[in-house]
Amino acid sequence: MSEPCITNTKAEQEKNAQRAAQIFIRKSPRSAIGYLASGVLYKNQNNIQEALDVYRQGLQLVSSMDGQYNQLLCEERALSAMLVKHRCGFYQRLPYDIICRIFGFLDYKTLLQCVNVCQEWCDFLLNWPDFWRILSKEAPQVSRSTWISLMRHQAQELDLRGPMSAVPMYNFFTFLLHSNNRHIQKLSFCDFIISEPNAVLLGQVLESMQPSLKHIRFIDCDIHPDSVVGPILTSCTAATYVSFSRSTRIPRSHNYVSRPSKSQITSSSMNTYSVTYLKLAFEYPPNLCLFQVDTNQLCGVIRQCPNLIHLFMDSGGSAHHGYCITEALKHCPNIKNIIVNDKAEMPQTVTSTITEREYDSSVTSPCFSRPSSRTKGLCRLVLGGGAVKLGYQDLMSIFKRTYKTLELLYLHYNGTTITASSLNKLASYGTPRLREIRLSTEDDASSENRQQPITKALAALFASSPALEAIDINNTFNTLASFSRYDAPDTAGILEVDDKVLRSIAKSCPKIRHIRVAGEHRFTKEGMLYFATKGGSGLIYLEADLDRSSVLPVVQKLGSLQRLHLRKDAYRVGEEVLGHCEETAVRRILQERGGRLVVV
Image 1 (cartoon, rainbow, N blue to C red):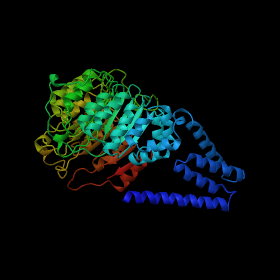
Image 2: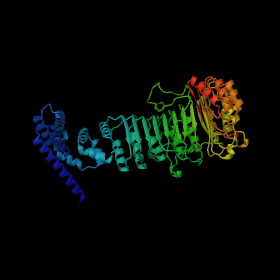
Image 3: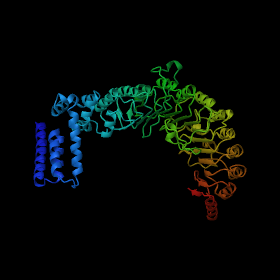
Image 4: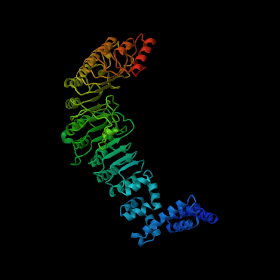
């Protein structure tokens, strides 16, 4: 009984508003306000002829000097054109009010289907106020301009933002599937919860948009990884940019996943994909077994992407990263970037400026940096975080295939896969193009692995990298933070830099311009002075825990140094501080060079 009461109340309100508008017209017949108010009320009730009569009456009485005369004229012309159109086509057989009542019995899904029947039905629904009320109720996230561009087949970029419940989403995907939207080139979903049935339907939608659809992004969308690798990803045959990303941090999973055999790799179809950029970053719940990525199917997709240039993967979940990387190196001859870390994002680099535009093959602009290597081969390799799943043989295979072309290398030392042996092997191959290297330790690595310093391997690696411009070594972890660098040598940090490493850099890396050493180290005052004397002529940035008595002579010898960041990573008995005179002199020298001093 409540619904009729609401209806009667609304009808009574509209009746009272119309009565007030008529009273205003009688009191002020030469003002456009009353005619406009009365016409809007008639139009909202689908009484087009009555609204037109009111507007025409106002045009006869209202002066053209009235401020709202032009608005009254525009409303009259719009309704006149609408009625002329309504008297053509299927409107000849039924009055406008009857057609409105017929469409009023249809639900959201059926109305979307009616849009695709013919141009006349589409035009009618776009001019019918009740149609927009239904759309705003069922899909409030989709703007009116987006609906119009979709229904008139004019949209080239479609940016959809949730949340949207399952049933309206299914109906919206159904509309996209049955409408001719092959002109859409970029499609973006943000904050959507896509169930498996909707993912299957979305895969059909994406397939129907080929081959014009080139750019697909899913941001903060809750999608099962199997649905991504399955119906969605396999439908993007002509897309060049495909990205699945979540903004929250992924909990690590140390559960090692076995390397699949070649016979286990499955391909959903025989299609060859045009994708050049592929990003897979998911948010995993605590129960990771429910959200495992099918490595076999993922490798099957990678095998069918001969144009793949950029591969980004998160380090969580259960996918075997080592096998995915080796498959990409085997079957994707144009591959340039492979990034595996917590968020599947390219870390900030020192030697080059990397923007999102570089990854979009549809953008051709000389304003962004690209890898300098013109020959085919991997240029950037990032294996960050202890959850990266690859075996020692996988890493050796990756190094063997990429050592000639690598320009940027980020490794997270864990003492099991990435070890002194693996770095020595890479050094034996040589890295002639390597420009930037970043090594870091694992916070929760076992104490057994931490007691294996790899200074010899570091020295050998730097000696085989003549093009190095930036070195970043992060040897910080909580357990050893309280040890003195001069005490307990057997418990030293695994990535400690000593005098041999500095001598290797000074002799073999003439292009070095950025050095950062964070955490425990074993180089001495004499070692740093040797480096400043024999090498580092082009060094611009230095960040390390230097002996305070060596700061001024080091700055004086490094003639190009502009920024010096003095760290305090270890406790020393009788800790020295940088004297006031020395600090003033250092600041003055660096300021003259356009730089500055930072003391922690």
